[in-house]
Length: 466
Image (cartoon, rainbow, N blue to C red; front, side):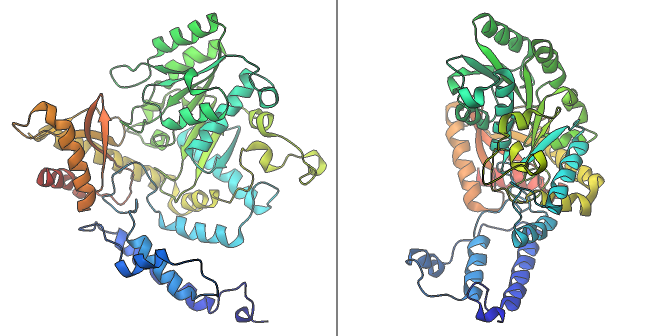
């Protein structure tokens, strides 16, 4: 039977593969330089989204062509002047890895042969890259799941047996900075602690969690019979890029026996950059850490990791045996260390990226994005009509347009309107934000395609549209 006679195989798959290669090459070429505007969806193509479920088989070539046109008219974080939020930036080797992983489709819930070696080595490599003393870890579907995984392990350590019995009416608390990501709130809710028991610790002048305030919060809770589950430090807050003082926080948590987790989904790769590494002093003293490789490490979503300093905590939380998944010779299955069951080989993207680009090129890319943020900061300071709202530590910059003579009470609405106008214009794609109650423009430099000569365009377009 030829592939064309098998209803499960694509008809003319060699031609479809050739078309796909062309589509990908065209997309890569479009990422090499900024667009002058965001494209709009063809009305005729838009009408096809109103059609009912297809009955008979269709044409794979036309389906691929439509998919390519739809994606080309979508907002892509791979473009050089996509500076909104913090997203993947489309390393080309990651596309190849994604295609291979999807083709063979191994399941990392059970023994998967060579795929497990890729995962294990990728964990060691990313831990070595940022300087984390890895003893255990896992790849997950995103920073939310990585943070939840670490928090569940911390809960089981603080309240042994909680995975079976629950908290049993015990009151428990989690501590984080006032700028921690909302994934911390979701994780606390999902694992049954309740978001009402999150202690938002005040910030110092650098927007970092204040260790002295943390001491007071933990000690007050303990005195009141509340069990501290974990302190969630942030290594690169989403809003301003602040890095909590890990060494000082470890000085608080270690003598009190409280788990210290680092949400480094965005910022932790900067620990490998010479100009920023000092911000992460004390990382080696933390109990766990999260990194999203689909952010500053450039590979496609999803590709997140959770790293642990001691082995055994993941298996204590997730280990199990079912009749449909026995332990061969008493050995644990990969799923005994993760929250997720059917788990694809997302680690292949990072493994191939490290193989092809190497740690040194990665460090150079990260340094360049840090330099871009410093350059934009300098330009904002020197411009009469822009105002810097915080001192950038990593690659995130919050600023606002403040035209001469505009009443202060109008600035918030003006900057929200300006952010909307810039998104519709498409030359610079950034997002609105709010710092200390003031609406502003926010950019995050994580894309390796964003060169230094493109940085001045941010203020040029903002001033023009403003």
